[in-house]
Length: 282
Image 1 (cartoon, rainbow, N blue to C red):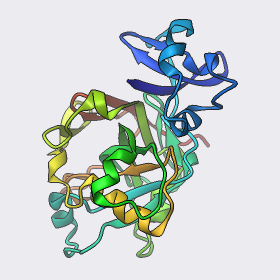
Image 2: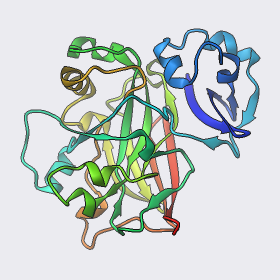
Image 3: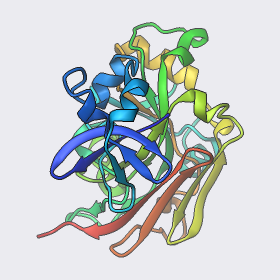
């Protein structure tokens, strides 16, 4: 299944993406699930039965929202591809590097990524997002994939100068409308094996990042095991699993995103997340 969150006639809802249509399952199951996060917590029970009753809206012109607009937490894995670790000059580490995003820093497919008025150092980071389905604590590697509800594309847009004010990443990773998430999540049964799939970022049509998912330093089971050790993972939580080398900050000269640019993050077989870049309004 492909599941997404959208705004229709000023109403936030969620549903299935099938062909060229969005099926408003959220309206049919409104008394059962308040949103997609709640439906994920309910193991998506009833979704298939509700599909015939769901109104269809063409994807063309749909107002996309972040796949899960209100996760309990967004945990991001830094320096998780060798090409990115090397370009940053960081040492090898024994454990994943984790930082957090806030849900209100996110934006949806086709919505603008906003360059804030306080910086011109807006960088791209194409990533695979992992959406947690079954919550838990101290989840073992062997059981980790059973806790995954689905996958999506993510652009962990970063304000690099604010990220580097101190050793803590948080400010540069949480400006409003910089973390693009979408267009939909795909369940594991439909996406299949991840390892050989390519993760590609394009800026104005030019490939700027490319790697296979199998090139992660810490794989998804490791990420889930580690994160569930220091926090309880909840249904709808998002793990943003890391970006390959090629980020704009490490190019000569640096390649910053600017108003008028269009950035895409593609995960093969899953989706293409596309966003224009605009300046923050004054």
